[in-house]
Length: 255
Length: 256
Image 1 (cartoon, rainbow over the protein chains, first blue to last red):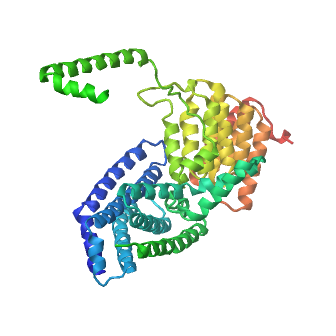
Image 2 (cartoon, rainbow over the protein chains, first blue to last red):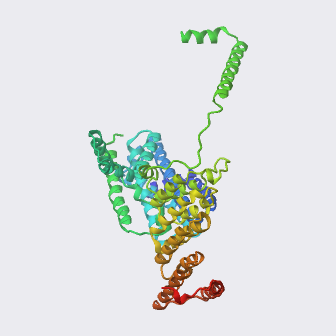
């Protein structure tokens, strides 16, 4: 497991993942500064919000691409077959991937947190919880990327599936809001009952990523710790759920 | 048929003939493209000045869970509305009703921020069309009503616009009274005095005196100290006003 762990970290280094993300983050910081200075007032807040949102998005995209293509490459080059030929269980393999990608997410988010804490004006407690929620968000997305890469044969399809998962998760607040909309207007038709049922099913299956990493925590601090508990609760449930799905599916795969 | 055409094309023609035909096809389609351009060059996007106001559902969908980021993006968009793509639009051409709808919508995303009222008070109030200022005044008052203890500054801005730019003294006095009543006790003294100054300007000296007296009583009850700067201003103002009141033969004892 340790060897695989080191190998994945080195692959990130070899593929210049860390360097590229750092360079892009530097560009985003410059862009955020430019946007911030152009605001009529609250320049520092504008800069902070732009940088935090964009850096989070870039790291998520970087991780999804890296994980999906790495696992797909491992299947193509028979690396996984070779590893499984040794006395390593399939669950151990999945957990190794999971720990490695989680550590890479941590490595990538740390520069963002450093830049925010030293170069912007932010609420310190808000920054702490924002950092935690973004790391948990990255862990959820990375776990889903691992699951989809193990299930789906094509790297491109895995990337698309994970990206769709991420955006649907981020829009989950809107879907939940839409469920009540026909009732609020007072007109409920048959097809709206069906769409309500579909939306309810989707909202029960997808995580509430819209509650993660809110920029307002950085600007104004945490008003209501219920938001934080929801983030922690969602992560504690969803990450093990997806890991067990991966264990189940990968355990049944024929090599 | 397609295969035989290609076979003939490949088999029967020499390389020189083939390249000439291909060149002719390139020229033909280039000519078609230029013709197409002449017909479509005047189809331009309608950029407009103030963008259409989205619904709350649209905001929920496109904010991707981060309403603060969406607020900042749209706020900046509103700041630059009408001045994009090298344009400079005079403020009199803006739809202030739509602008106000935008202000209120963005306040629903973040009502703690002072970015939108700053835009309204310092930028959009510079319109050449004075009739539009009522939208700005109403918006600033509504924004301040959300949390008067922290947002009292926008009462003052609304009052200032109403008095100096819009020219509605009654409205300015009403806003100044709101500023006096709703600003916290630790707000600067002038927030309490503003209504008296406006009433005195209108010649309602008795009312002005009553207000100043009540301010003094409130400060004495709360045992609040007045800063030296504020005291100096009050002395200067009173001495100036006394000269004017003497000219008017004003007798404060006649005030009920």
